[in-house]
Image 1 (cartoon, rainbow, N blue to C red):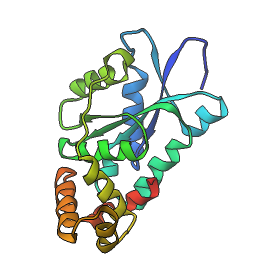
Image 2 (spheres, one colour; image 1 turned 180 degrees about the vertical axis):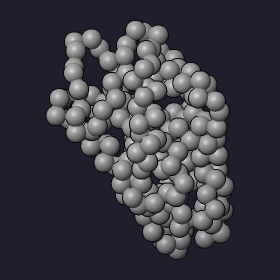
Image 3 (spheres, rainbow, N blue to C red; image 1 turned 90 degrees about the horizontal axis):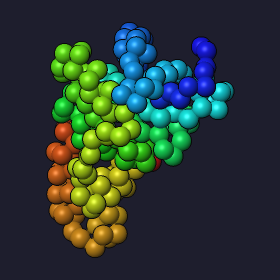
Image 4 (cartoon, rainbow, N blue to C red; image 1 turned 60 degrees about the vertical axis):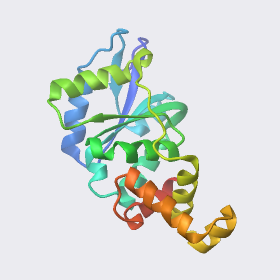
Amino acid sequence: MKTTSIRATNVLIVTQCSFTRLALGAVLTGMQLPSGEKINVATGAFFNNNHMIIDFIICADDLFNEVSLKSILKIKESLKHASLSSKMVFLTSHNNFSLGYFISGLCKKNGYCTSIDKPIENIVMDLRRILNFSELPPHTLILTAREREIIIELIKQKKPAYLSKKYSVNQKTISAHKVSALRKLNVVHLNNIFSLNALI
């Protein structure tokens, strides 16, 4: 891959599907941002070897089919090549948005979600808007501070009795925070997201 002196927006695609990687790569490589910058899509190793900053990590929908340790480790691996200013984009179904924002929070990155359930031309428009630094959409916190603290502690497999003492509340309150957090994250069981412990 050739590098030029022209500033480019560097993008790393995280997916378990080689077809998705090729399709997304083709879409992004042919895209030009309103600023005139090109999109540079490459592997984490390429960016690292060339001392280039990754601007965006794009996580594809297949990572959410099952929030497995394998998929979470792929996200964790991508962070090795990221900088403090790198941002995360989740291209997924709308019902996974809250989980995407939660994951970006665990990664200490600004996160943005866009729906994959739309025509390709609309997906391209969304990605162009997100990748254009001056037009990043706002995102709000999904969980309350206490819900976030408790769900992270539970992911780390801390016992409700321990959390009850730590936060000076009864176990029913801990359970209520857990249920509320899982509902907001659109997750049925806590077991489904234990693999997120790898990001903590």
